[in-house]
Length: 564
Image (cartoon, rainbow, N blue to C red):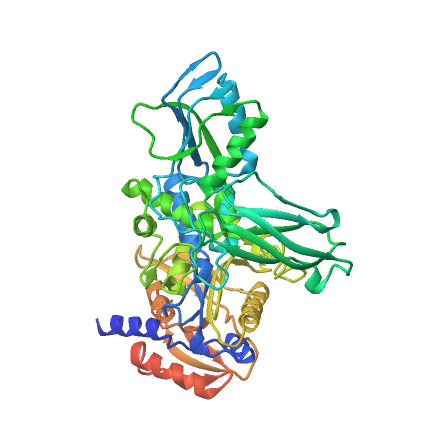
């Protein structure tokens, strides 16, 4: 029991003999060791741990927490799930006239946008509807999320990443204004009468660069109808500038866009918009479906789409605990789904809103690695491909372009003020796949943390693990033993210090090596007449003596230091 308590304290406090190569990289980065958590292991629940440093320290995850929601969604709903948007009526259709309302119920499809209107209008037209005498009624009751447009997480409340969820989402709650100075034109990309534009721009004959390349923008939401004020000087030589901001309600934007699309098809709507639930006596006309959940999950991870992540969490809340969805239901749903599938180990976990725009969300590197291992074992490459592929797409397209890491890493990144994280999978040149989690807290600039992460991942790509793990049978009985000829991952050159943890006539069991791994110590085994287990290597004798104290206290009181 005492040993177990100590192991827990070791994990919690991060008391590990940090490998020399990794220690050197951290020192070069100038980040404090206490501000870095690293957990690297061979992929799979039984994979060998390569590096474990502060792996049980609770840290702010930022957007890496999105993978919990995406994986839980796939577990619960499957890769081919599609979000529905249902269209009903309580009226009667006679001679092309729908006498009554058309009712739209949103079920949280985060992808519904202007391009979907063509299919929706085509379905309405196919029913023989030429005129609607009633209203367009919208039911957004599937989510209980309030009326906030922006999370207000930072000083950029109108930026798309701050958009709040809604069951009747449209165009990701983003209003796009097209400013084209060289044609003296300003227009809304989508027909939307829910906000106004005031143009105070002054066109000038200057090069399209610097302060003349972009309009000044001020959004006023103090009135019933929000207003976007365009002001300042802009070059008349500039082409189109798309201003994308969170300005209005998505269901209002949907209403205006749908009404305009129907009008273009020759279908008139006499009424206006109404917000209320679908009546019990309503009959279903048709259902519009989103793309596959696999596509949505991939965009959530690759593009780090906060709105999509919020919708996935809320949808799971409704699926598990019933509508209306709430953030609390969503949190509990994600955690319960993952725990039921054995995807969460021990450690701190606070999910909050599921997208990472949070300072209260917390997790540990070890817990995240356990989930990544579980996801790979269940879905393999198909799951990995939902993450950003190094040098190819997503948030690490540019980061690893032209490096040895290109096409060898599948990662989810996360960035907030003072937080820079990355997690996922890395394949070495030797063809071995590793689960990797690197979480950093930094006051010295994101670029230093990113460089440290890049250096560690590059090191891992070039890491030449020569050892193998193979199962053999004990000649004396049928119990299984493991041959653990483990190559030292950090250094194989001479003049290094090791701790000889033990010398054995017969091969040590797997359980013995697991005890070493729980201490976070690198090791190798040599067989020269006897099986010798060596902890290390260490460039400095003082580091070896630190490891020696741990080995003598928790493995073997007769352990000693050797220099090879």
